[in-house]
Length: 414
Image 1 (cartoon, helix red, strand yellow):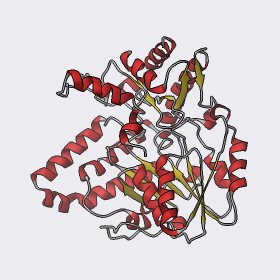
Image 2 (cartoon, one colour):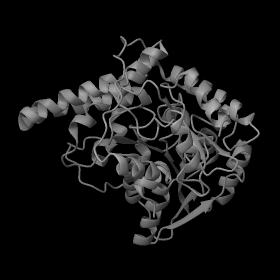
Image 3 (cartoon, helix red, strand yellow):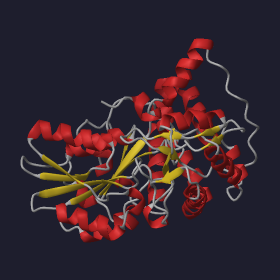
Image 4 (cartoon, one colour):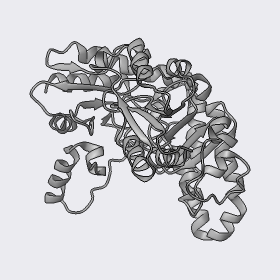
Protein backbone atom coordinates (compact mmCIF):
# COMPACT_ATOMS: atom_id res chain seq x y z
CA UNK A 1 0.00 0.00 0.00
CA UNK A 2 1.42 3.38 -0.98
CA UNK A 3 1.67 6.00 1.72
CA UNK A 4 1.90 9.75 1.37
CA UNK A 5 5.45 9.61 2.71
CA UNK A 6 6.31 7.01 0.12
CA UNK A 7 4.72 9.06 -2.66
CA UNK A 8 6.67 12.16 -1.76
CA UNK A 9 10.10 10.77 -1.29
CA UNK A 10 10.36 6.99 -1.63
CA UNK A 11 12.31 7.03 1.58
CA UNK A 12 14.47 10.11 1.15
CA UNK A 13 12.34 12.43 3.25
CA UNK A 14 12.00 9.82 5.97
CA UNK A 15 15.74 9.76 6.48
CA UNK A 16 16.00 13.52 6.41
CA UNK A 17 13.08 13.99 8.79
CA UNK A 18 14.52 11.51 11.26
CA UNK A 19 17.81 13.33 11.24
CA UNK A 20 16.20 16.72 11.76
CA UNK A 21 13.92 15.46 14.52
CA UNK A 22 16.83 13.94 16.40
CA UNK A 23 18.80 17.17 16.58
CA UNK A 24 16.08 19.83 16.59
CA UNK A 25 12.52 18.90 17.61
CA UNK A 26 11.23 22.42 16.95
CA UNK A 27 10.47 23.45 13.35
CA UNK A 28 13.07 25.85 12.02
CA UNK A 29 12.11 29.11 10.35
CA UNK A 30 12.23 28.99 6.54
CA UNK A 31 14.85 31.12 4.79
CA UNK A 32 13.70 34.63 3.99
CA UNK A 33 13.10 35.11 0.28
CA UNK A 34 13.74 38.50 -1.32
CA UNK A 35 10.74 40.77 -1.85
CA UNK A 36 8.78 40.03 -5.00
CA UNK A 37 9.64 42.09 -8.05
CA UNK A 38 6.75 43.87 -9.76
CA UNK A 39 5.07 41.13 -11.77
CA UNK A 40 6.29 41.13 -15.34
CA UNK A 41 5.11 37.96 -17.10
CA UNK A 42 7.75 38.41 -19.80
CA UNK A 43 10.58 38.27 -17.24
CA UNK A 44 11.36 34.83 -15.75
CA UNK A 45 13.17 36.35 -12.75
CA UNK A 46 10.04 38.35 -12.01
CA UNK A 47 7.90 35.21 -12.33
CA UNK A 48 10.09 33.32 -9.85
CA UNK A 49 10.10 36.26 -7.45
CA UNK A 50 6.33 35.86 -7.03
CA UNK A 51 7.13 32.74 -4.97
CA UNK A 52 8.74 32.77 -1.52
CA UNK A 53 11.18 30.02 -2.44
CA UNK A 54 14.59 29.72 -0.81
CA UNK A 55 16.73 31.77 -3.24
CA UNK A 56 19.67 29.40 -2.75
CA UNK A 57 17.62 26.38 -3.81
CA UNK A 58 17.69 24.89 -7.29
CA UNK A 59 14.21 23.40 -7.16
CA UNK A 60 13.20 20.56 -9.47
CA UNK A 61 10.37 19.26 -7.26
CA UNK A 62 7.97 22.21 -7.43
CA UNK A 63 5.57 20.04 -9.42
CA UNK A 64 5.22 17.51 -6.58
CA UNK A 65 3.52 20.02 -4.29
CA UNK A 66 3.60 23.59 -5.45
CA UNK A 67 4.56 26.78 -3.70
CA UNK A 68 1.87 29.46 -3.93
CA UNK A 69 2.60 32.58 -6.02
CA UNK A 70 1.93 36.02 -4.57
CA UNK A 71 -1.53 36.39 -6.14
CA UNK A 72 -2.67 33.05 -4.78
CA UNK A 73 -1.25 33.72 -1.32
CA UNK A 74 -2.96 37.11 -1.18
CA UNK A 75 -6.30 35.70 -2.33
CA UNK A 76 -6.16 32.88 0.23
CA UNK A 77 -5.40 35.39 2.99
CA UNK A 78 -8.19 37.73 1.88
CA UNK A 79 -10.83 35.00 1.78
CA UNK A 80 -9.57 33.42 5.01
CA UNK A 81 -9.74 36.75 6.85
CA UNK A 82 -13.24 37.39 5.55
CA UNK A 83 -14.41 33.93 6.59
CA UNK A 84 -12.77 34.23 10.01
CA UNK A 85 -14.31 37.64 10.68
CA UNK A 86 -17.86 36.68 9.70
CA UNK A 87 -18.01 33.24 8.05
CA UNK A 88 -21.72 33.04 7.42
CA UNK A 89 -22.08 36.53 5.97
CA UNK A 90 -18.91 36.24 3.85
CA UNK A 91 -20.14 32.94 2.41
CA UNK A 92 -23.60 34.31 1.64
CA UNK A 93 -22.25 37.47 0.04
CA UNK A 94 -19.42 36.01 -2.02
CA UNK A 95 -19.86 32.28 -2.71
CA UNK A 96 -21.75 32.51 -6.01
CA UNK A 97 -19.58 35.33 -7.34
CA UNK A 98 -16.31 33.59 -6.43
CA UNK A 99 -17.42 30.17 -7.69
CA UNK A 100 -18.35 31.78 -11.00
CA UNK A 101 -14.96 33.52 -11.17
CA UNK A 102 -13.08 30.25 -10.66
CA UNK A 103 -15.26 28.46 -13.20
CA UNK A 104 -14.71 31.19 -15.79
CA UNK A 105 -10.95 31.25 -15.18
CA UNK A 106 -10.71 27.48 -15.63
CA UNK A 107 -12.92 27.56 -18.72
CA UNK A 108 -10.85 30.31 -20.32
CA UNK A 109 -7.60 28.44 -19.67
CA UNK A 110 -9.02 25.16 -21.01
CA UNK A 111 -10.82 26.80 -23.91
CA UNK A 112 -14.13 25.25 -22.99
CA UNK A 113 -17.58 25.82 -21.51
CA UNK A 114 -17.47 26.34 -17.74
CA UNK A 115 -20.54 24.18 -17.30
CA UNK A 116 -18.47 21.14 -18.29
CA UNK A 117 -16.05 21.54 -15.34
CA UNK A 118 -16.46 19.94 -11.92
CA UNK A 119 -14.24 20.97 -9.01
CA UNK A 120 -12.53 18.56 -6.63
CA UNK A 121 -9.75 18.54 -4.04
CA UNK A 122 -7.13 16.61 -6.04
CA UNK A 123 -6.40 14.41 -9.03
CA UNK A 124 -6.99 11.35 -6.85
CA UNK A 125 -10.45 12.56 -5.84
CA UNK A 126 -11.28 13.38 -9.44
CA UNK A 127 -10.21 9.96 -10.69
CA UNK A 128 -12.10 8.20 -7.90
CA UNK A 129 -15.29 10.16 -8.59
CA UNK A 130 -15.02 9.60 -12.33
CA UNK A 131 -14.35 5.88 -12.25
CA UNK A 132 -16.94 5.32 -9.53
CA UNK A 133 -19.62 7.26 -11.39
CA UNK A 134 -19.27 6.12 -15.00
CA UNK A 135 -22.29 4.13 -16.11
CA UNK A 136 -20.87 0.63 -16.52
CA UNK A 137 -22.50 -2.78 -16.21
CA UNK A 138 -21.05 -6.06 -14.95
CA UNK A 139 -18.90 -7.52 -17.72
CA UNK A 140 -18.07 -4.13 -19.24
CA UNK A 141 -14.36 -3.66 -19.62
CA UNK A 142 -12.07 -0.77 -18.67
CA UNK A 143 -8.70 -0.80 -20.38
CA UNK A 144 -5.84 0.95 -18.58
CA UNK A 145 -2.05 0.62 -18.74
CA UNK A 146 0.78 -0.80 -16.69
CA UNK A 147 2.23 2.72 -16.47
CA UNK A 148 -0.68 4.48 -14.77
CA UNK A 149 -0.53 5.92 -11.28
CA UNK A 150 -1.76 4.15 -8.16
CA UNK A 151 -4.86 6.35 -7.97
CA UNK A 152 -6.11 5.14 -11.36
CA UNK A 153 -5.27 1.51 -10.69
CA UNK A 154 -6.84 1.53 -7.22
CA UNK A 155 -9.97 3.46 -8.26
CA UNK A 156 -10.57 0.92 -11.00
CA UNK A 157 -9.83 -2.01 -8.66
CA UNK A 158 -12.41 -0.70 -6.19
CA UNK A 159 -14.97 -0.34 -8.97
CA UNK A 160 -14.28 -3.88 -10.20
CA UNK A 161 -14.63 -5.32 -6.71
CA UNK A 162 -17.90 -3.48 -6.16
CA UNK A 163 -19.90 -4.40 -9.26
CA UNK A 164 -18.07 -6.81 -11.53
CA UNK A 165 -16.55 -4.43 -14.06
CA UNK A 166 -13.52 -6.01 -15.75
CA UNK A 167 -10.23 -4.09 -15.65
CA UNK A 168 -7.41 -4.94 -18.05
CA UNK A 169 -3.91 -3.46 -18.30
CA UNK A 170 -1.64 -3.16 -21.32
CA UNK A 171 2.07 -2.28 -21.52
CA UNK A 172 2.61 0.50 -24.05
CA UNK A 173 6.41 0.41 -24.24
CA UNK A 174 9.21 -1.80 -22.96
CA UNK A 175 11.88 0.89 -22.53
CA UNK A 176 10.70 4.39 -21.71
CA UNK A 177 13.65 6.12 -23.39
CA UNK A 178 12.80 4.32 -26.64
CA UNK A 179 9.05 4.89 -26.52
CA UNK A 180 7.53 5.34 -29.96
CA UNK A 181 4.23 6.99 -30.90
CA UNK A 182 3.23 4.33 -33.41
CA UNK A 183 4.01 1.47 -31.06
CA UNK A 184 2.11 3.10 -28.19
CA UNK A 185 -1.03 3.59 -30.28
CA UNK A 186 -0.80 0.13 -31.85
CA UNK A 187 -0.37 -1.67 -28.52
CA UNK A 188 -3.30 0.19 -26.98
CA UNK A 189 -5.61 -0.46 -29.91
CA UNK A 190 -4.65 -4.14 -30.00
CA UNK A 191 -5.88 -4.49 -26.41
CA UNK A 192 -9.31 -2.95 -27.12
CA UNK A 193 -12.14 -5.50 -27.37
CA UNK A 194 -15.87 -5.19 -28.11
CA UNK A 195 -16.40 -5.17 -24.32
CA UNK A 196 -14.14 -2.14 -23.82
CA UNK A 197 -16.27 0.81 -22.74
CA UNK A 198 -13.56 3.01 -21.17
CA UNK A 199 -9.88 3.59 -21.88
CA UNK A 200 -8.08 5.09 -18.86
CA UNK A 201 -4.66 6.60 -19.53
CA UNK A 202 -2.24 9.14 -18.09
CA UNK A 203 -1.04 12.07 -20.19
CA UNK A 204 2.48 12.17 -18.70
CA UNK A 205 3.82 9.23 -16.71
CA UNK A 206 5.30 10.33 -13.40
CA UNK A 207 7.28 7.08 -13.30
CA UNK A 208 9.34 7.73 -16.44
CA UNK A 209 8.42 11.13 -17.91
CA UNK A 210 6.90 9.56 -21.04
CA UNK A 211 4.18 11.79 -22.54
CA UNK A 212 1.50 9.82 -24.34
CA UNK A 213 0.28 10.91 -27.80
CA UNK A 214 -3.24 11.53 -26.50
CA UNK A 215 -4.48 13.17 -29.71
CA UNK A 216 -3.37 10.22 -31.84
CA UNK A 217 -4.95 7.78 -29.40
CA UNK A 218 -8.21 9.76 -29.42
CA UNK A 219 -8.30 9.83 -33.20
CA UNK A 220 -7.70 6.07 -33.40
CA UNK A 221 -10.31 5.04 -30.81
CA UNK A 222 -13.88 4.40 -31.91
CA UNK A 223 -16.47 3.90 -29.22
CA UNK A 224 -14.82 3.72 -25.76
CA UNK A 225 -14.63 6.83 -23.60
CA UNK A 226 -11.07 8.17 -23.39
CA UNK A 227 -10.37 9.29 -19.81
CA UNK A 228 -7.10 11.06 -19.09
CA UNK A 229 -5.23 11.70 -15.85
CA UNK A 230 -3.74 14.98 -17.03
CA UNK A 231 -1.98 16.29 -13.93
CA UNK A 232 1.57 16.21 -15.32
CA UNK A 233 0.60 17.83 -18.61
CA UNK A 234 -1.85 20.35 -17.15
CA UNK A 235 -0.01 23.62 -16.55
CA UNK A 236 2.84 22.66 -18.92
CA UNK A 237 1.49 21.77 -22.33
CA UNK A 238 -0.20 24.22 -24.67
CA UNK A 239 -3.21 21.94 -25.03
CA UNK A 240 -6.72 21.67 -23.65
CA UNK A 241 -9.59 19.25 -24.25
CA UNK A 242 -10.11 20.39 -27.85
CA UNK A 243 -6.46 19.71 -28.74
CA UNK A 244 -6.32 16.41 -26.84
CA UNK A 245 -9.60 15.03 -28.16
CA UNK A 246 -10.34 13.15 -24.93
CA UNK A 247 -13.74 12.63 -23.30
CA UNK A 248 -12.67 13.33 -19.71
CA UNK A 249 -9.64 15.20 -18.37
CA UNK A 250 -8.81 14.99 -14.65
CA UNK A 251 -6.18 17.11 -12.90
CA UNK A 252 -5.14 18.66 -9.65
CA UNK A 253 -4.29 22.35 -9.84
CA UNK A 254 -1.70 22.35 -7.03
CA UNK A 255 1.17 21.00 -9.11
CA UNK A 256 2.42 22.53 -12.38
CA UNK A 257 -0.30 25.21 -12.34
CA UNK A 258 0.90 26.39 -8.87
CA UNK A 259 -2.66 26.54 -7.63
CA UNK A 260 -3.81 26.39 -4.00
CA UNK A 261 -3.07 23.16 -2.21
CA UNK A 262 -6.07 20.83 -2.12
CA UNK A 263 -7.71 21.86 -5.40
CA UNK A 264 -8.47 20.05 -8.66
CA UNK A 265 -10.98 19.62 -11.45
CA UNK A 266 -12.65 17.22 -13.86
CA UNK A 267 -13.57 18.31 -17.37
CA UNK A 268 -15.90 16.19 -19.51
CA UNK A 269 -17.50 16.67 -22.90
CA UNK A 270 -21.24 17.19 -22.87
CA UNK A 271 -21.78 13.75 -24.40
CA UNK A 272 -19.39 12.05 -21.97
CA UNK A 273 -21.10 13.55 -18.91
CA UNK A 274 -24.31 11.80 -20.02
CA UNK A 275 -22.56 8.51 -19.24
CA UNK A 276 -21.76 9.61 -15.68
CA UNK A 277 -23.82 9.39 -12.49
CA UNK A 278 -22.77 11.74 -9.63
CA UNK A 279 -21.27 10.01 -6.61
CA UNK A 280 -21.51 12.76 -3.96
CA UNK A 281 -24.53 15.07 -3.73
CA UNK A 282 -23.85 18.56 -5.00
CA UNK A 283 -24.74 21.74 -3.10
CA UNK A 284 -25.02 23.79 -6.29
CA UNK A 285 -28.06 24.38 -8.45
CA UNK A 286 -26.82 21.52 -10.71
CA UNK A 287 -27.76 23.50 -13.81
CA UNK A 288 -24.84 21.98 -15.72
CA UNK A 289 -23.05 18.60 -15.82
CA UNK A 290 -20.03 20.07 -14.05
CA UNK A 291 -22.11 21.50 -11.24
CA UNK A 292 -23.94 18.20 -10.80
CA UNK A 293 -20.62 16.35 -10.51
CA UNK A 294 -19.02 18.80 -8.06
CA UNK A 295 -19.19 17.34 -4.53
CA UNK A 296 -21.21 19.38 -2.09
CA UNK A 297 -20.43 20.13 1.53
CA UNK A 298 -18.27 22.80 3.07
CA UNK A 299 -14.82 23.05 1.54
CA UNK A 300 -11.58 24.92 2.16
CA UNK A 301 -13.22 27.81 0.35
CA UNK A 302 -10.29 30.20 0.72
CA UNK A 303 -8.20 27.76 -1.32
CA UNK A 304 -10.80 26.86 -3.93
CA UNK A 305 -11.67 30.48 -4.61
CA UNK A 306 -7.98 31.38 -5.02
CA UNK A 307 -7.63 28.95 -7.95
CA UNK A 308 -8.67 31.85 -10.20
CA UNK A 309 -5.41 33.65 -9.40
CA UNK A 310 -3.36 30.59 -10.41
CA UNK A 311 -5.08 30.51 -13.78
CA UNK A 312 -4.55 34.28 -14.09
CA UNK A 313 -0.78 33.85 -13.58
CA UNK A 314 -0.57 31.28 -16.38
CA UNK A 315 -2.82 33.29 -18.65
CA UNK A 316 -0.65 36.37 -18.14
CA UNK A 317 2.49 34.43 -19.04
CA UNK A 318 0.77 32.62 -21.90
CA UNK A 319 0.14 28.91 -22.22
CA UNK A 320 2.50 28.61 -25.20
CA UNK A 321 5.33 30.46 -23.43
CA UNK A 322 4.98 28.25 -20.34
CA UNK A 323 5.23 25.17 -22.57
CA UNK A 324 8.22 26.52 -24.49
CA UNK A 325 10.09 27.48 -21.32
CA UNK A 326 9.46 24.16 -19.60
CA UNK A 327 10.46 22.12 -22.64
CA UNK A 328 13.61 24.20 -23.19
CA UNK A 329 14.81 23.64 -19.62
CA UNK A 330 13.89 19.95 -19.71
CA UNK A 331 15.75 19.51 -23.00
CA UNK A 332 18.89 21.11 -21.56
CA UNK A 333 18.67 18.88 -18.52
CA UNK A 334 18.19 15.72 -20.62
CA UNK A 335 21.06 16.62 -22.91
CA UNK A 336 23.40 17.13 -19.98
CA UNK A 337 22.36 13.94 -18.22
CA UNK A 338 22.56 11.86 -21.40
CA UNK A 339 26.20 12.87 -21.80
CA UNK A 340 27.27 11.56 -18.38
CA UNK A 341 28.79 8.07 -18.35
CA UNK A 342 27.47 7.38 -14.82
CA UNK A 343 23.85 8.25 -15.71
CA UNK A 344 21.14 6.34 -17.59
CA UNK A 345 18.39 8.60 -18.91
CA UNK A 346 14.92 7.02 -18.96
CA UNK A 347 12.83 9.89 -20.34
CA UNK A 348 12.54 10.20 -24.14
CA UNK A 349 14.57 13.04 -25.65
CA UNK A 350 11.84 13.91 -28.18
CA UNK A 351 9.50 16.73 -27.15
CA UNK A 352 6.45 14.97 -28.60
CA UNK A 353 6.99 12.12 -26.13
CA UNK A 354 8.03 14.07 -23.03
CA UNK A 355 6.99 17.13 -21.06
CA UNK A 356 8.60 18.47 -17.87
CA UNK A 357 9.46 15.30 -15.94
CA UNK A 358 12.99 13.94 -16.44
CA UNK A 359 13.87 10.54 -14.92
CA UNK A 360 17.27 8.87 -14.72
CA UNK A 361 19.45 6.46 -12.75
CA UNK A 362 22.91 7.13 -11.33
CA UNK A 363 25.33 4.20 -11.21
CA UNK A 364 25.86 2.81 -7.72
CA UNK A 365 23.15 4.90 -6.03
CA UNK A 366 19.52 4.33 -5.20
CA UNK A 367 17.19 7.15 -6.18
CA UNK A 368 16.63 8.01 -2.50
CA UNK A 369 20.38 8.21 -1.83
CA UNK A 370 20.86 10.42 -4.87
CA UNK A 371 18.06 12.73 -3.70
CA UNK A 372 19.68 13.12 -0.27
CA UNK A 373 23.11 13.85 -1.73
CA UNK A 374 21.65 16.41 -4.13
CA UNK A 375 19.78 18.11 -1.31
CA UNK A 376 23.13 18.60 0.42
CA UNK A 377 24.18 20.52 -2.71
CA UNK A 378 21.01 22.69 -2.61
CA UNK A 379 19.47 20.80 -5.52
CA UNK A 380 15.93 19.58 -4.81
CA UNK A 381 14.96 16.51 -6.82
CA UNK A 382 12.63 13.63 -5.97
CA UNK A 383 12.51 9.85 -6.16
CA UNK A 384 9.68 8.20 -8.07
CA UNK A 385 7.36 6.11 -5.86
CA UNK A 386 7.52 3.09 -8.15
CA UNK A 387 9.57 -0.05 -8.61
CA UNK A 388 12.11 0.53 -9.93
CA UNK A 389 12.46 3.97 -8.38
CA UNK A 390 14.23 6.62 -10.48
CA UNK A 391 15.82 9.96 -9.69
CA UNK A 392 13.38 12.57 -10.99
CA UNK A 393 13.72 16.23 -11.96
CA UNK A 394 10.91 18.58 -12.92
CA UNK A 395 12.02 21.97 -14.29
CA UNK A 396 9.22 24.53 -14.26
CA UNK A 397 8.92 28.22 -15.07
CA UNK A 398 10.41 28.81 -11.60
CA UNK A 399 13.64 27.11 -12.68
CA UNK A 400 16.58 29.28 -13.70
CA UNK A 401 19.10 28.33 -16.40
CA UNK A 402 21.73 28.45 -13.67
CA UNK A 403 19.70 25.88 -11.70
CA UNK A 404 20.04 23.43 -14.59
CA UNK A 405 23.82 24.00 -14.60
CA UNK A 406 23.93 23.53 -10.82
CA UNK A 407 21.91 20.31 -11.01
CA UNK A 408 24.05 18.85 -13.77
CA UNK A 409 27.24 19.65 -11.88
CA UNK A 410 25.84 18.08 -8.72
CA UNK A 411 24.81 14.89 -10.55
CA UNK A 412 28.20 14.71 -12.23
CA UNK A 413 29.80 14.81 -8.79
CA UNK A 414 27.72 11.98 -7.31
